[in-house]
Length: 381
Length: 165
Image (cartoon, rainbow over all chains, first blue to last red; front, side, top):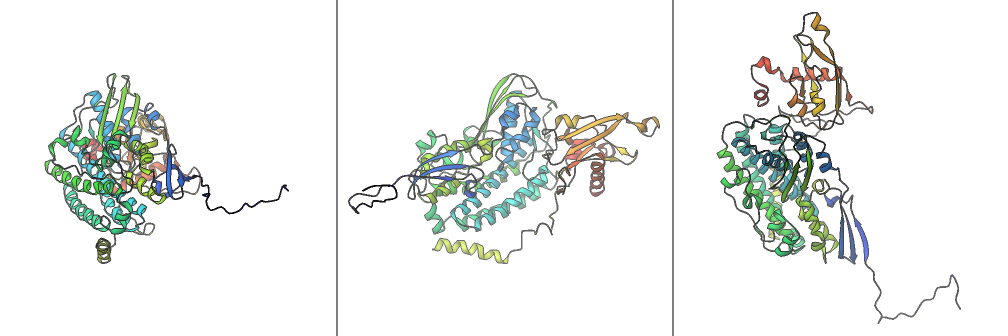
């Protein structure tokens, strides 16, 4: 007897396991832990992640194409908006590329000013990472401490460049204005505050048992794979590879300064976190030396208002807080570039997700993404 | 357990520290002297006319094309009051579109445009942030009074030196 509406219930057979299927779960683009607009499609088997597919492009603004329609001095404003938590570092790389192409010699003082601001921005960026990583782990307090100290850096930026975030302060051939008169005093005060602040942040979170349990041996990656995937910056150094563009290919005046490159040993979330904390201390060390060496002199090389670099192509790269940030620039001899290609470190870091998240739990997925410290502004451009 | 207690010690200490936050709409933190708010036009009080001649250099250099300007013959030139042959006729900035980059100030040859400290411009009408010449000069005059602004010719220093303050 059979028919519609009749349900046949078979006998319970415990020897036959229940069939399970993998479930697809969309994480993002509005998920708060994705640090922007980023969508991960997770295939999960229970709580275990089987596969992950990152979807990017929600913040695509066509910056690279926009660059082709703007003159060189205007493009700096676009670079501010790529990695929007380390604006000075982005501006620097573009300026370096154009200066290399047009063979402009940047005055010493301008180089030191650039270096100081970039290192400060690195600290600000890492403090933001510190706060949000705490949030990802479920700790609400760290972000308050991180932002308290970051705020001091931002107000110094405001005093120097006139803007807290989108500075547009670096120029091709130098910087826009000289430092304010009270810069040295403020800087000395700020360095003390930051030193105390970083130590405090470190004490607050790093060796907490809960935090260690959430981050130790989560999202491990070995050096070989990390290099193969193109990881750079703190994420690569966490695996034990002491690669730092400031050392490997010194720009500005980094070759005159003494600093160590902190490395991790296991390449897990905790290592990635702790490398950044230690990097802040190294940045403070760099800042102290740079402030001592800061020379007097001009801040701007003689550059024409409408710059027309010679025909050619150039690559410049620098160590951003996130990693090796590169710019490839092609000039056709006019006042606008023919092509600008950005090599953002965060993009490569996202590509490592597939490797990092396999066999993780869903709850750890937030930690792993947080520990990579991606900024979607530079991923999507 | 010890690690967590050490962390708690840090938060305990915070009880005895001064407050660092400001209750924003009630309290306003002061902005830095160099703060770049919205661009405004300056007023030449000696001749009673704007510094701007409507030369459009700022319009051409603006990365977002947020402004427009036109120029006219200066009526005060015939009367012998002014030395400017041309003067701005219409000037409009879409402040909603402005990205506060300060390029217009850099390229201006007449000290006619400055970045004011104005940064709170919420309005109730849709196009309320498209400000015209009259409003720009009004905002500029407020800014001039507030910071004691002087054109670079009168202070005897170049524009770059002035900017370095």
